[in-house]
Length: 147
Image (cartoon, rainbow, N blue to C red; front, side, top):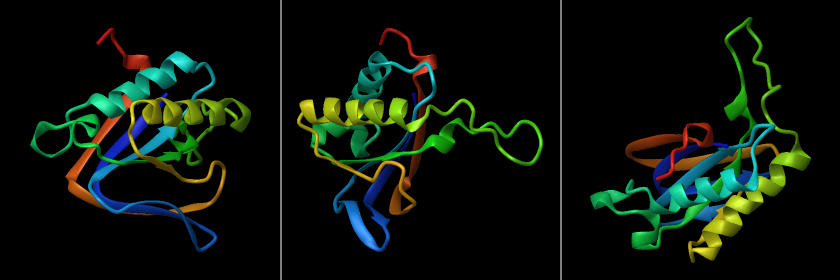
C-alpha cells in the first residue's frame, strides 16, 4: 500500500457538491492507494504508521494529540508514467480488492481511538485542504521494515 500524508490545519472532501468528510482542526489527510498484491498486514502497517509517526507540530504523532485523519482512496498513486504520455494504471488494485483494504486502514485507526473521516470510494471527489508547513510524507508498505 502507498500513502501520501499531508499535515493540514483543515480539510474537506466533496462529492457532487455535498461534503462527505471534513476535519476542522489540525490533522492528517491520507491519500491511500492499493496495489494488486497488498494484504491486510499492509493495511495494519500503514495505519500504525499514520497513527504513530511524529509528523504533527512539536514532534507529536496523531495518537499523541488525538488529531483527526481524513482518509481518501486514490488509485492514481499507482500510476506509471515512465513510458509514453498516458499513465498505466495496471498496478492499481481493482475496487473489490482495494476498498476492503482502505476500509481496514480506517478500522485500524478507529481501533486506536483516532477520529477518522473519509471520502467516498470510487467517486469523483473534490479535495480541499490547508497544508500545514507545508508538510508531506510518502509511505510505501513495500519499503517497510520491522519498526
